[in-house]
Image (tube, rainbow, N blue to C red; front, side, top):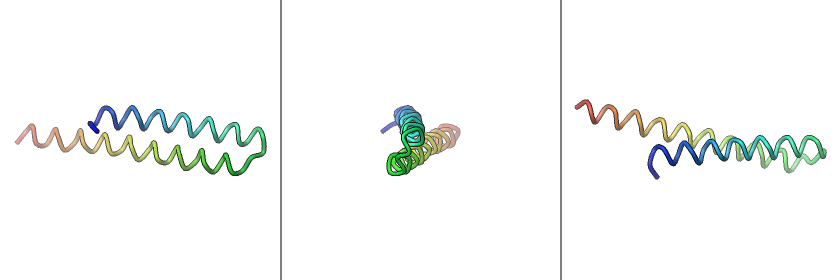
Length: 63
C-alpha cells in the first residue's frame, strides 16, 4: 500500500474503533469496547506507517 492509502485506511480504522468503543460503553459490552480499542490502535499504527513512508520518500527525493 502507498502512504496515502495507509493513512486513509488507518483513519477509517480509528473511527470505526472509536465507534465500537462508544457502542460497547453504552451497551455495557466490554468485549466490543476491547475490540474497538484494538481496531483504533491498528488504525493509529497504519497512519504512523503512512507517515513513515512519506518521510522516507522525502529523504530519498532529496538525495
